[in-house]
Length: 343
Ligand code: AHG
Ligand code: MN
Ligand code: MN
Image (tube, rainbow, N blue to C red; front, side, top):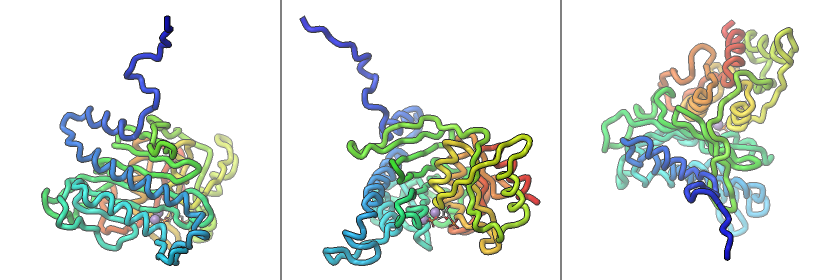
């Protein structure tokens, strides 16, 4: 006689939830969904896997040929920023889900060639964020946001489709290429994180329903710019790193890649700031494909994101590559910073 071992009901997964499964489950909760969004997301996921695979080999560039020069076969090796940009464009353009794209690496809006169907979504992205970190093997990332088009369906999209407020984002996310690779995304109601298993080639749900702590203990800013800041920003940094009656001295962490600094901020709490300074009067970071998607994610996790005066998500964009100051993170920490920044 054999003794069957109980493994629980058949629908209880022994493998965890893949990103694909997560997207399909959520699509079924929305009866009006056509599958277009899931289709677009699957293409972004493929691009993330391809970029992640290339990033993990970046350290071999000295052996295989430096990026920007020729490799041992005599072929041109593309710079990783450019590689990541082309990867996203090529995985998405033929899918029929988007009508226009905007990228940090491309001056003009990226049109969808007329041989492909013009979709109902708009994709904006920073293909490789923190690319100065590539050569030192530190974390880098990809940031993206998705809007619904505002111009008539069926035609090519225009700049008008790209110049939309963060408040109207349908979904945003980032991929971090770090000690492990992760994809974190939100459609506005919750934020979920998936860790990549390279053996299987899939992202698995590892951080469901991320909530940012109300306040943290870390501040993140390029303090080398101290002498170029306003007095308000200087006073805030002097205050935050000093112990006082109602708080400990905050610790400083600054990786120099917004994705990595904000990933930590989302999980641990605290604040990430890139303020205006004498060299960057409107701040350094780009509104549409850096600040807005990150603000969308952080707000969905219970945090706050401001340009120093207004919520980043409420800024009405006027230019594709416009910059904005950012104060993002735990709601109490952002409120504290704004009290100083506004003076
Ligand atoms: P990118 O590599 O896409 O140009 O972005 C770099 C950005 C951002 O990731 C980071 O937070 C910031 O630049 C760092 O700037 P500083 O070196 O001026 O601190
Ligand atoms: Mn960037
Ligand atoms: Mn970049």
